[in-house]
Image (cartoon, rainbow, N blue to C red; front, side):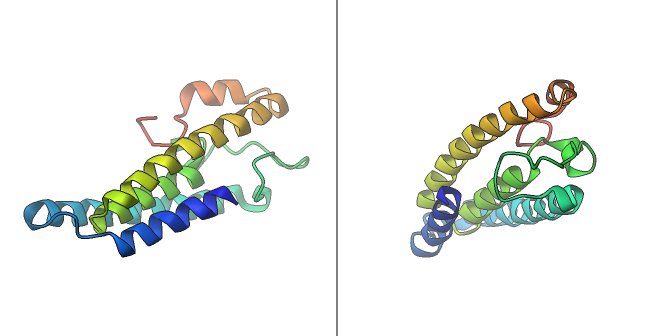
Length: 144
């Protein structure tokens, strides 16, 4: 529920407090923002498709779930969270909203904490998860 509140705050902040910069900075921000929105959306869609029937709204894996390491999950361990972060950052830049950027930073901390808790459950459930963690970034492909 908290992530819905945070995502709503990002959206509203962009709508209500945008246009904080103009000129070339606004143009660069808009281009980067659009690219991040598209990349985040692609990561989310691919993550949903790759997880398939194992998708659950709760961070604890289902009893009959399998460990997915392919597709978007080969890039990051949490593509849905990473995609939402990329999209939130993109929206913040596209709308030129410092308030949305701040909300996105809070969202990043939230997703990082949520991912850490989820990973403890995944390590307990899947012996291969430790190796997967060692070779795959948590939220941002090639970075983190």
